[in-house]
Image 1: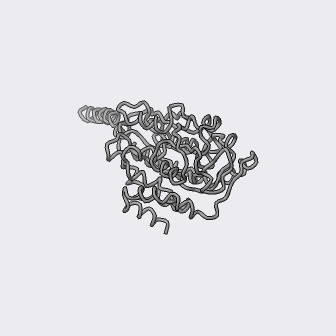
Image 2 (image 1 turned 180 degrees about the vertical axis):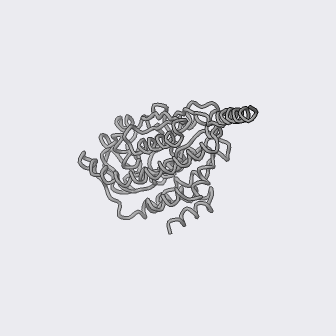
Image 3 (image 1 turned 90 degrees about the vertical axis):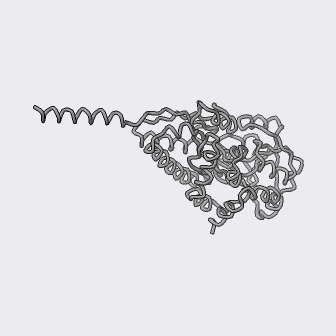
Length: 329
């Protein structure tokens, strides 16, 4: 009788302890400025699905696309506040460089990455982790999860441009970050601050004549319909960063944090694969729809024009920047 009681007691306590140790469930909201079907959204979807798969459904993420929750700056500002209703977002690192995240500014320095392989090597390195953790360590209320890319950024315009000289006096869109302002100043353009959600209208009305995006975003947002000229200067790499609020991150168990880390690596890898597959395809589609691509055979004039902002930006952390450059070797 005593032995039966002990067995029953052990079984009951095991069940109770097991229920106490069960992982807490979460339902998160994720913001994306780009439209459904775009490279960024496909990457987001890979991340969301992998988190839900690895957590066996205990962590769900509702993805909102097309900028319905706001643009990069608006979403970031919401996430910096306690009790944010947006938990995760895909943003531009430049957005955080305006929040005293000086390491993030290094990723915006013109002509930093020599090619896709150079960036991908960086994105998987401990150097990337230093930058991803910067806002969290600065107690901003956000933590970076992973970096990916949308391809090199190129200027596109409502009128044909063939050289640096053609930018003189033209109205150029900026989202308000200092590096892009420095590029515009170097090109002798006139900066116009416009939210991404309003860019199409700004180009349509003529309040902006020149903007810049990776080819994938240029197509998915239909900018080619009103600004059909793209000059392939590749002044910056379209680096993208998925971030989570510190509140959401800190609420996760160690096991759940590992799920997010594994899902981040998976989504990053999927993005790199998709980019290679669709970049040349997108270019063909754009050409068939009337886009004219202007090749840049010698980039030296562009580098010279951007020399001041390159030098200013690198001083924020010259040592780390040198390590990033060295990865190209």
